[in-house]
Length: 271
Image 1 (cartoon, rainbow, N blue to C red):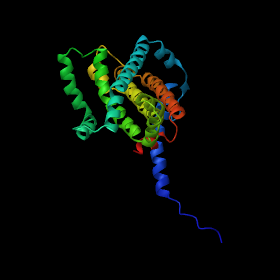
Image 2 (cartoon, rainbow, N blue to C red):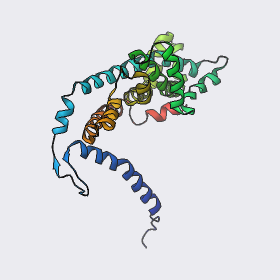
Image 3 (cartoon, rainbow, N blue to C red):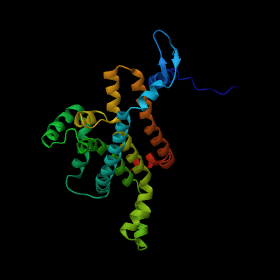
Image 4 (cartoon, rainbow, N blue to C red):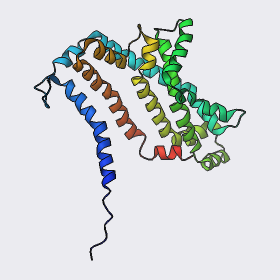
């Protein structure tokens, strides 16, 4: 007799197909527009492909200025966030102090309420401090957005470290710094690297804070892309910038896959 086969889950297949289409189709359309010169309704396929809009976009000084500013902001914000949040994450994971739980969950506050309303309130304060339209004003507002990644994920990473290995190292005379460098950091490092990558990419694509606090002096790539679409009404300009914005994400994901490894998140959240 033929072995009994489980019934086909058609509902799951249909749901997966619809979800995939909802995610992949917009990417395909935007990628197609980036290499299209003529695409008129009701044609399904573009009438003319070409790189004319790539040449026009890449020869604009404001594009390269926005890309430079976005990379500078992402780098500075990520480094500052790591310097501030990683020691705090270690303290939350390993120390017991008054108000620890309340303070730990307070980092969710910025994500528990409508973000734009919070930005308006912060913008009013920044206006009094002359931080509107400045590089460091945008750094501060984007720094707030990294707290969730750079506190919660590293806390889970430090909690997942095998304490028995740390105690064994101390028993044979290793100093606290040596234990941290040789035992704690190698185990928590991959998950911390994930948090750093998420913070960098999230900062690179952050739009609301960069627009509200940075305008008119600071214009990042996402803000410039929105400006191209809204003001010039040439969809190819926005599509080209969208494809350019995909590149950092792709590089970060490839780096994450190489450095972090498949079991890093499981180890990190296991605590």
